[in-house]
Length: 441
Ligand code: G6P
Ligand code: MN
Image 1: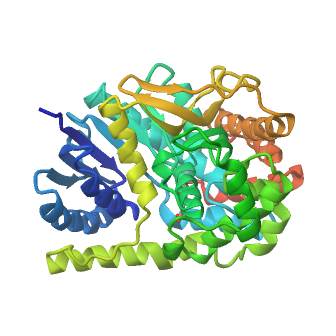
Image 2: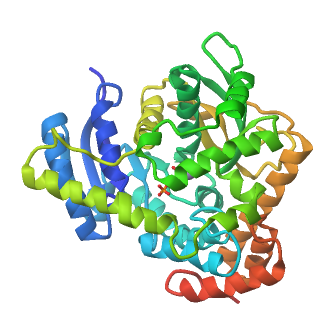
């Protein structure tokens, strides 16, 4: 008989959870679940989504033994896979991460630049606690982590848990891009075999092979050059995301070697993007008034109606399906290729070994086996190394409680550059994050 797995979702009250649950239903033959537990520290948020889940699962996945809880023991005991997707400080703090830098004249973004730094220093402590708690109850569980900013979180976890080979940090943006390439090319993204290198939210596709080994990247670049670029789920996306995808055309024009991760727009064009961002209404506001509102309303409606058959949930298939596919590939030793975040150790031969890089890897029951990238060109190496130094210094700043390291980190970030600006933004962020950050010396 085929095995079934016990899964826990940490951050059960997230706006992403309903979409993830829908993906689990859709993929139940590929990744069969025995017990599913949702855990959150915010009880009332999770309750709304938990009650929706009960209705959805009763109709679509009745064999699952489902519950939601605020008890760590219940969430972490006897579990095979832990999916983590937390947001320390919630959207209220995301709003500040975006608005404080913008009010001082630098990029304000959830994971990039000063905003990402602030979010990173909030996430680290909670993530360490979660890993310790999971390990207390389930020492062999796979921990698949979506928590942002993934680059900083991954670096911190690498330092604290160097021997834990069952923590895997992932990001759905490369998959979003692969599926979008599929749409542009009129092909199924499942057949693509990508070659990719970089840091999280800071990488490039160098090749995109189809099933016959033909590289589709040159054709793709031509199409983007002529027609622009849109996400696979463009019809579901807010304007800011469409603007983000549109920037890929500009990036390919300036740096035509490879296809960039969309997040590079903030590092290539900080002044231009700054001029386009509204400091009074940021992505956080768009999410609070859009996805968050709609998801919670729809969950409550479904729970009340007692059926999810006509459910219209805001969701992102790539996000929900990717984490389930990763679990499937590990659980059944599928050996499929996915882009994940790993310690470099020579994958990119001219980048330092202890960098957490984002690359393609074969995912097996024994974990990821990365595909070699080799030597990268001077421009990409330079870009990566300054960003990597920023990430490492951000994590140093957290563990050492060092104002000096924090200032160095922000000064190295391409979205800031000026040390005077870095100091101003840092001081404002320290004030806003005093309930979350370590005491700085
Ligand atoms: C992409 C990134 C995630 C990020 C998300 C933000 O999926 O890979 O890391 O959290 O975008 O999306 P949002 O709709 O909340 O701005
Ligand atoms: Mn991401």
